[in-house]
Length: 168
Image (cartoon, rainbow, N blue to C red; front, side, top):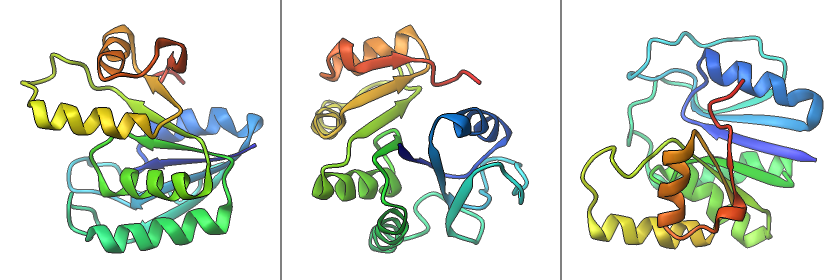
């Protein structure tokens, strides 16, 4: 199975999780940026899996346009040809572009989420958008029970949700 997993950029715990997947699939990690302004993670040159970086410069959320991101995602995913895609949540252009790519090619999508309902006040329109987004996803990998409940509240069936996102 060919699996593409997307992240903004890889930190040490992402690398540990992805390295554990290597014996089980043909893996491509797709980073939006090789580093970002939010975390002091240093780019890691050597990883035990394939890796694609969309934008080499340090990332600032929203820096690349949605069109640039979609073009880069399309190129990377088309070149790899994944059987399954795992996307980080529902808010970023990277995840949305990957889901659009997958829908056009009938490639299953797994949304990865650590969001829970009590994180911060929820807005009706945004929750509606998330529900629409999750209709496009085939499953979810969440951090724990509160995250599972939140994704279920957004409309995903419990049988399509797995806990273990934060596990190495």
